[in-house]
Image (cartoon, rainbow, N blue to C red; front, top):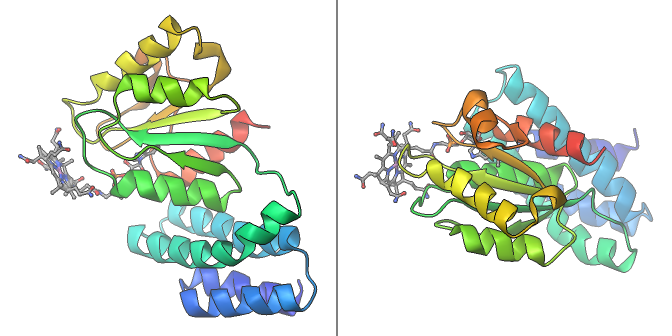
Length: 211
Ligand code: B1M
């Protein structure tokens, strides 16, 4: 691995935002392509963060600061990636369902997906079904992700899936769900395409849908 890429990788793993940014700038200056810096530096570091989280070596705070460092590096790369026409892995709509204001987990899912190479449209919290439907209607969406932290708001996931069916859009997107009270069997019952227990597995699941 190239030395600068290696230092980006290490800086993200240790959640060092300043070094990540400095090293990404240096990598750009040294002539490395934005696509390589993204893939081999930022994305591979976030993949390793996900692995460590799944193995119980990292906890939520480590994952959060690593994701923040990744985002800092991405801020520098984003305009360059746009200019060099590097395509994202896919487009994901994310939101916490109507009536629910919890967004810490959803934001973590967003960061892990971004770290995996997806473009994210984050609709925020308290998102009504018709807002999800409108976003899917805009086209080009691969995955719709819903988060719920309250047992009282979980049913809104099904209402949203029903609204997608009614709008004849259900076949156009894969629907993934998650949040502390959500389970695989609940996801199956409401007709979601997938469930992930945490942010890292949400990213792996989304990747599996876009090949
Ligand atoms: Co609230 N709250 N809260 N709360 N809150 C819970 C969820 C609760 C379990 C606490 C409790 O009573 N023990 C309880 C729910 C009980 C239930 O429904 N069975 C509860 C309650 C009752 C409430 C209020 C009703 C309290 C009140 O006002 N009386 C109220 C509701 C407000 C509303 O939403 N309308 C409320 C409010 C709040 C705060 C605003 C104070 C704050 C939220 C701040 C914020 O999010 N910006 C808050 C918090 C912080 C919590 C707890 C303490 C922590 C939640 C959290 O952020 N966890 C929570 C208790 C707990 O969980 N220990 C609690 C950390 C986060 C990283 O984990 O969100 O689970 P989590 O996300 C994980 C996975 O679930 C998964 O990946 C994430 C990372 O690995 N995941 C997905 C999440 N979304 C995913 C989507 C995916 C895939 C995976 O695909 C798309």
